[in-house]
Image 1: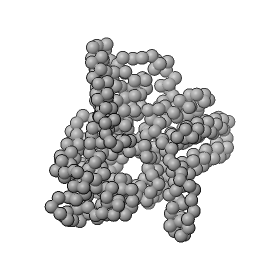
Image 2: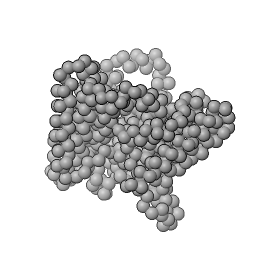
Image 3: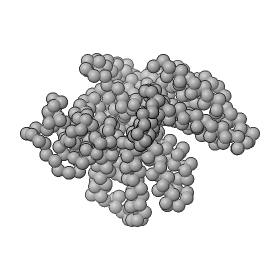
Image 4: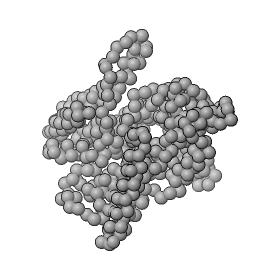
Length: 449
């Protein structure tokens, strides 16, 4: 909606002024005034995010608790508000620490509104982007960057249009009726959960690749946001690989300010739990997201307690065992899949029905799985899809490394630039036609957050 463009502009203008006030106070130095301005700025940003993202959720829960019928009206969520709000919060916190200072409103506006990252990340830092924007060399067309960017954009589009959208019907066929009150068989629930696990990965990883590819075309480098997270052998490693920019933001601007690991074991565990619960709530105004964050917080607490109990020497010895590494990978992936159920389900009761079916043995009522049959799908095809995509996440080359390899091969002036760029353009055109021909609109999942 056009009004949301005005909202974005107002957010940028007000945060730029906050940043100027904070930087001016830091230079004096006047830490009290700087902190006061930072608190006011945080209240503004979190209040804006809270109204648009959580107003309906808050009122619905109050009404449920008190038996009232209060309403703000239907508050719509502006696309990208979570990402551009977090980007500006990081800028303000860094300005308070004296790490950054911006006096040019045009440069600040460019930093916030840089379109490849605006609607679904990654969460960027001022220090990562402004030196690049200040480099005059980026304003000249470079053949290697243009062709390499097209290749990586095509790879990301393939992940989204072919892989993520290809597996999506098997997730939807289970989750939608379960949210409506039906109870799936154990086989259906696991197929739906695994299908969504893979859909989400290729959807968001594909978006991140497309953002990186677009940026390369403009000679800009965005930070990588994924590093094969389903290869992780423990939950801490998973969070170092999944949505890296958000994990870094939560660590640097929430976990560390809460005290991090500097105030004893009990406080460290509490800080970790609070960080993960708030990280879950950031994704959406729903108790399901709160539970998802709490589950990951619990996983991380158990992981840290386990390593503390065994000791680093014994953990290192266990990590060298091939059997232990494979068992650790399987356990990590199973826990991640279980948590994704709460991320995908639109109702908490639907998520609990999925979990109940996954953790018990429940056979289909008829000769064929009813939920898949009603959607015109076959379980065997779904399992083949899941096996193929899981193998891709585990054994295919990492797209970050593919991108680096492509740029290295295109750096020398050679016919490969034209060949690679042309092939990528053809692939992009084909996938856009495939997407246009579909009956349903296929938006990126993280546009909802």
